[in-house]
Image 1: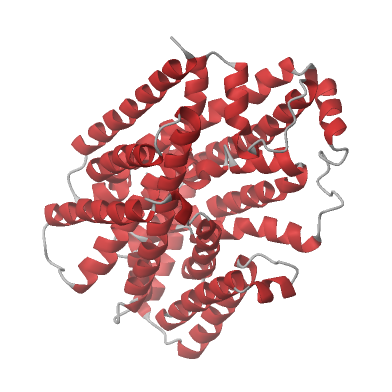
Image 2: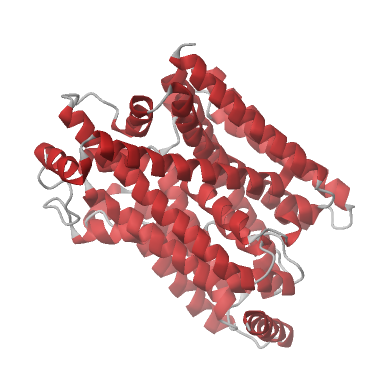
Length: 500
C-alpha cells in the first residue's frame, strides 16, 4: 500500500471512533440536562482534556508550531499567557461556577446562570448574551469547517468542498445525537491523540537531529535569535498583548461550561492538575516540533522560503514515521479542529434553545421537546456555518482572534463579578457585556485606534473598560435582595464544606 492509503486508513479509523462514541452518548442522553450538560457527571480527566481540546483547536498543531518555526521563541509569549490564564480559570472560576450554577435554579448555560443569579426580570441579559454566543460561534464553527476542508486538500488532495462536508457531517452527526456527553467524550479522546502526537514528534525528532547540542546549533545557524524570548523584534506592547490572551479564558462559554458539568468541587483540583499538565506538555511539544523541524530542515538543506510554515507538524510526522503513524498524526490535527467545532456547536445550541427559544416562546414544554429543539438548533447552525464555509476564499478565520477577545471582554468581567461580588446588578452586568464587546470590536477593527497604542490587543481595553462599566453601573443601581445574598452565601458554604 502507498503512503496515502495508510494515512487514509488511520483517518477512517479515527472517524469511525468518533461516530461510535456519539452513538454511545446518544444512548445515555434522556433529558435536557443530559443533552446540554451531561447530567453534571463528568470526571476530572474528561473535564480537563475535553476543556483543553475544545480550547486549542488547530492553533496548537498548526498555528503555534508555524509561528515558532518562522519567528522563534518570541512567539511563545502567547502560550505563556494562555497557560497562566487557564490556571487562573481553574482556580478562580471552576469551583464557584460549578456550585453557583446549581444553587441558582440549576442553570445549565452561562446566560441562564447570569439571568438567575441576578434575578433579571427583563430577560435582557439572557437574550443578549444568547445572541452574542449564537452569532460569534456560528462564525467560529464555520472557520473550523474551513480548516477541515483545507486539511483534506493539503493532506490528501481532496476537493475542498468534499473535505469540508466530510468534517461537517461527522462532527455534526455525533454532536446532533449525543449532545454534551458525545462532545466531552470525543474531546477526551481527541485530547489524548493531540497530546501523544505532540510529545512523540519532538522526542523522536531530537534523536534524528543529533541530540540537544546539535539541534540547538542547527537552529542558531538559521537565526542566532531564534531561541531568545526577548529578541530584538520584541516590544513591551507585544508581550502584554500576547500575555493578555489569558484574560479570554474567563469568558469563553465552550470552555467554562465544562466546569459546570464536573461531578463536584473536590474534583476541580484534580481536573486542574490534569488540564494544566496536559496544556504545558502539549504547548512544549508544539514548540519543540517547530524547533526540531527547523533543525532537521537546516541539516538537510531543506530550508525554503516558499514552505508553508504552518504545515511543519504534518511534514515532520511524514518524515519521521511509518505512513500509518503519520496518519494518526494527521488525525491529531483533525481532532483539534473537530473538537472545537463540536464544543462550539453544543454551546450555540444551548444558547438558541435555553436562552432564546425557551425564554421567549415556550416555558412549559417537556424535556423531550427541548432535546429535539436542541438537535434542530445544532442542525440549523451547522447548515448556516457550512454555507459560510463554502468558499474558502471568503475565510472568516481572522474573526477567531476577535471572537476570543469579544467573548473574553464581554463575559469575562461579568462572570468574575457574578461569582465574587454580591452587589453586581442585572443592569451593571448588561452594561459590562455591551461595553466590553463594543470596545473589543471597535479597537480591533479600526487600525488607527489600535496602532495609536502600539498594536495593543483589543481584549486589554475591552476587559478593563467592561469591568469598570459593570462595577460603576452596579454601584449606581444596586438594591439589596435577600434571595441573591442568600444564594451567594449558600454557594460559599457549599464550596467550603466540599473542600474540607
